[in-house]
Amino acid sequence: MILLVNELQLLNAALWQIFVGITLIWLQKYFDDRR
Image: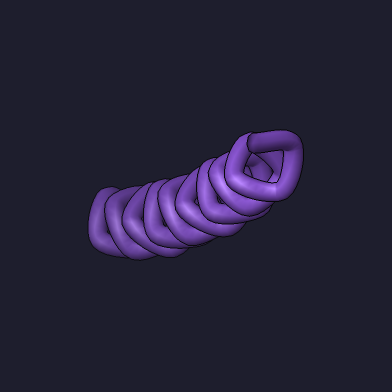
């Protein structure tokens, strides 16, 4: 049971990093287009 929770936390962290990365790239492109 503890292993499952640990894996879910790792998966959640990975998804969060991907989400943040995509958001930063999108914001960069958005501001580059605005300039």
